[in-house]
Image (cartoon, rainbow over all chains, first blue to last red; front, side, top):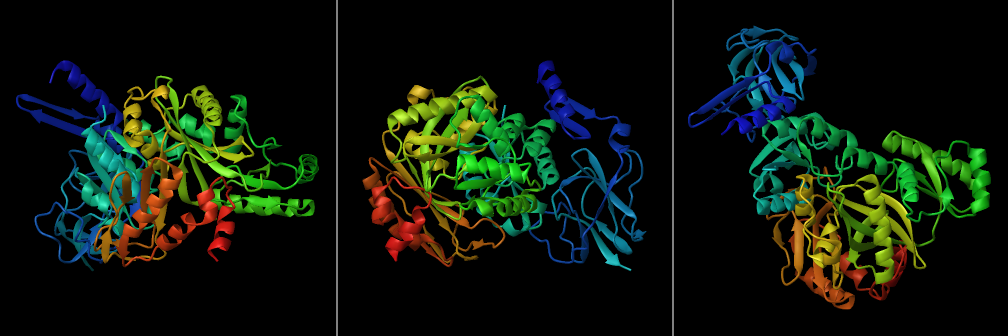
Length: 147
Length: 440
């Protein structure tokens, strides 16, 4: 990869909605990142998570094992952010109790930060996706127990 | 450079596009709704992403989910297929704004042709004959009634944003005109969110003849001959053939040159179809479909040009791989649409094969056709030296088409093309009424 290629990648990166981009091949390694403020200050739209109790087995979840209990699934296609800012703590952790209306994560789609809020009081049993991972419609994000 | 492509569609057209990509060495990304988890296009693509629940509005028409899926799967381009968002200029713009390549005409071209009043104005500007009618939209009903008295009845009221027969009314009595304008406008408002209607002279039983066009981003535009799609039921095409028995080489050349002038004039690139009404040796511009069409294999069979691959190439910035003088129309092709009469699970499927026999489908043994989407489950295409031979060939080929578990219109299609009326050729869009009488 020469300078021209790298500049082309930067140009392409600027045209996308990606917040961050890491590249490594052999000895070449670089890391592109948008200024955090740019990414996180846009007004978050609120999307509600469907309380899906139906099985979603066909969706490949990155988690080590398939969730057995009730899950909160992604209502849209996008990139998940578990934290409000890159160096801030996550919205929710495993074992945490959340109230209806609490933010669980942000799902970025087309440069819009959509806050995913809990539709009911529950305990987060397991976080099923990694930060900044791509999620499909219906991807299980959290395994929960209703309170 | 297109190295990966997301197909924003489903069914046979998604399968068709994936095949073209594989030939071009392009990585494919399929999208699917929850109703299409087991669909063939999902199995065939290199990657597949679920974009929503079964209703199209929340999945195949969900612009945000489609673009997120494309960006996250590192697609370079999006092919919209047919239907869904294929003629949506707003979607095309969002695709481009996201830094992706749109496989289709420029959004501005779609805008110039999507609205029927505007596209007619453009056709007139570039010297393409249009159906006589009343210029512009209907604004004052009383004035319109007076104007219609001058051009004479019957007339047809059409929705400017229309398609599929919605907001369309034929009027044969002047006293029924005012009410019908209101009904058509209301229907158009409900179907398309735009109640604008206009009026044309109604050509009794004209043929539906359409011209396949292809342009690149370097100003080259060619026509690839016509398709005759006059066998229709409620404005839905059932049988398509090329060439049209009504079009002579002289008329084809004149029609083609008119069409090229229009497309060059508006700077059109990609695949497009100009639909004409054809009567008494005259053709009249009807509308443009600024996308690939379901019946494109008919043209591929006759010309030998792979239209989907050509679309991808020109979107990539390449010049057209064929020139006008390379396009020869010296054989015959026909397509039959196989529509499911109801949903069902495929118990046994054995499609026909043979020399110049093509089946575009997404069926496989064990697949369940969902009730959610279009009823077309397969297209059967044949090529033959002449029309007479082609009809016999299609009948033989359809005899080989074996499908159990999903009821279809296959037997009816065989009856239609085996009638004297169809065999004779040279009919208009009301031909199905006479065909049904002959079948009895």
